[in-house]
Length: 281
Image 1 (cartoon, rainbow, N blue to C red):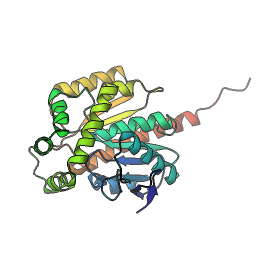
Image 2: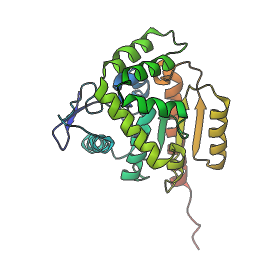
Image 3: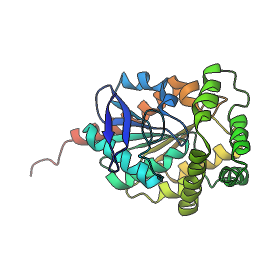
Image 4: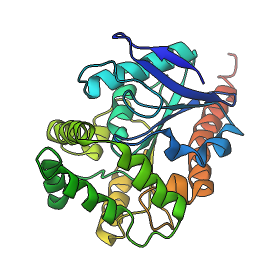
C-alpha cells in the first residue's frame, strides 16, 4: 500500500489501483476509513485510476501525534495528489468530506479538478436536529449523540456488512475524534452557509453530481432539482437504498453515476478538440 509523509511526519496510506485520467480520489468522511469504498473501488478501477485515502488518524494512517483540523487533512490530500503524479483528479467524497472536495477544487483549479462527486451529504443548511447532534458530540453526552446518529443511519438496514461498518469501523473512534469531527463540520457550515452556496461560488462552475439515498424527504430532493434547473452544472440522483452508505449498498449504481459524469466531460472535451477550425480565407 503506498504512503506519503506529511509535513509534520504523519504517514498517510492510500490505495492506488487502475489506470487512466482523470483519476478518482476517494475521500472518506470523519470517523470512518476507506473501507467505506471497498465495494466501489474494484468497479471504478476497472475503468480508470483510483486513489483511495485513509485520513490522518483514521485506518492505516497515523495522526502525527498532535491535534489537527480540516486544513491539515487538506494538506495531506494535496500531498497524496502531488506524490501520485496525477495531473487531473475527480474527488469522490463521502458525506462531509465534500468540504475537502470543494477545497481541492479551489486549490488546484478547474483544469486539474474538472468535476466533483458527492455521496450522501447534507448539501443544504444543516437541519436543527443535526446541529443539536454536533453540539452534543463536543459535550459529555458525546456517546449518546454518536449512538443516536448510528441508530438513524441504520434505520431499516438489514445488510450485515453495513451494520458492521457502522458499529465496528465508525464505532472504533473515540471521544476525541468525534469531537474534532463535530467541531470541523460545524465550522464549515458556519463559514460557507451550505454546500450548494459554496459550489455556486466556484468560478468557473464545476460539473457536480450528488448521489444520495437518504433522507426520503421529497422537499430535500425537490430543492436540489430546482437548484440544478437554475445551475445546469449541478446534478442530483436519488438512489434506491435504505442506508446512508450507497457506495456500500448499491455500488454498481454509484459507479455508473460516477462514470457517466466523468465520461460526459471527456466526450465534450474530445468533441470540442475535434471541431474543425474556420475555413481558410
